[in-house]
Image (tube, rainbow, N blue to C red; front, side):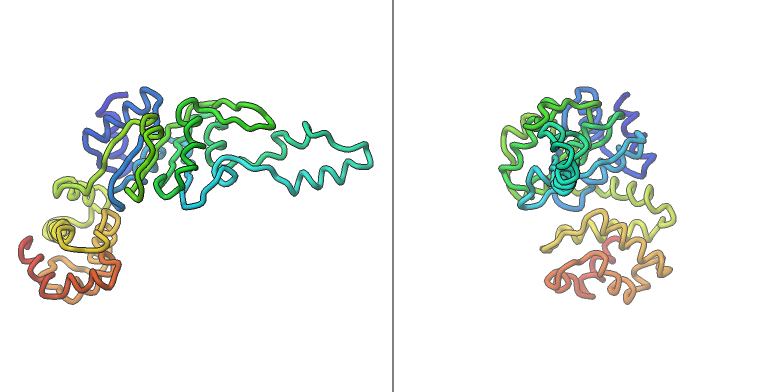
Length: 288
């Protein structure tokens, strides 16, 4: 697999990647190392894992991180209800041994254990790892370095096949050095005008010409304004779909529609105050 293969493979799924990201993905798979993707929200970090899994026809296993996430929700837990039923059912036959109770039959596999239990290599997405507590990172270290999980009652379980691991982070908190050392790294920023045009063309080929240039130009300009929630690529695509669906071909001739569809781009009341009609007219005028 070459750098071009990665870019063509992702492009076939509608994902436009630059050389740096494509190289990071190539090396992550070639070296068998996890890849940490950092960057602001809305730049397509999660979509990388989805596109990679779709391109390689691999199962996507996603662990969505949040504050308070622990091993029982991320790695495994025992099915205590089934264990209790087994104990009650076997009491008349002399009881059930501890070894029988703590076996695969009663093990509930959560995303991390599920990922290393697959016969074919899946794509494991650990999304927004910076939202989880620092203590949770310690659970990940064994998996990210040795691709194995230790369960006290069963011992060490090695991976049947090594998953492609992608971690994403939005900068909510600093990640530990131990976690970073185990990963390759790539930073995803908001795309350039040319890249965003290519994304729009790949995802929504029906939007073209003047409208496509206006959409990308206005979104790029809005990102330079003092907004609380900067619009990402997904918001840009939603806005393009809304304008196209309303039959808009030229924003300058459809001021009411443009202003009404800002619900796709702006996500707080304060941000609406930053983009009144006169500001939108000015931005559209620059890219018309």
